[in-house]
Length: 74
Image 1 (cartoon, helix red, strand yellow):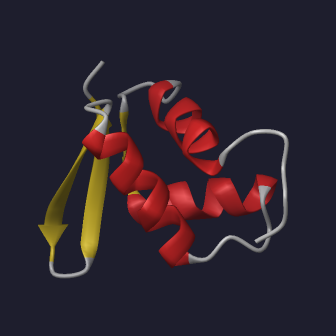
Image 2 (cartoon, helix red, strand yellow):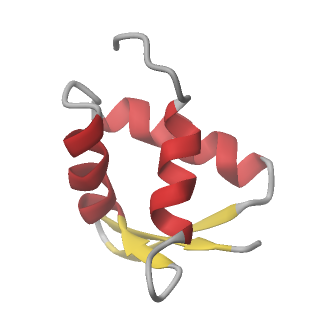
């Protein structure tokens, strides 16, 4: 991953928190993040989600076998 002026977790939080429903599917989030950071992998996204979840800013829930939804807590 290359160096950027904003950390990935900051961009992820901004995308989720500015969505109308304050919720987004992981696949849709990855596509939006890749628009800004083209070489981001799913592992990079998961690390950013874990940082935000540990900080209590988001919650990640599994809705199907391989499908997760991310929602803003505050």
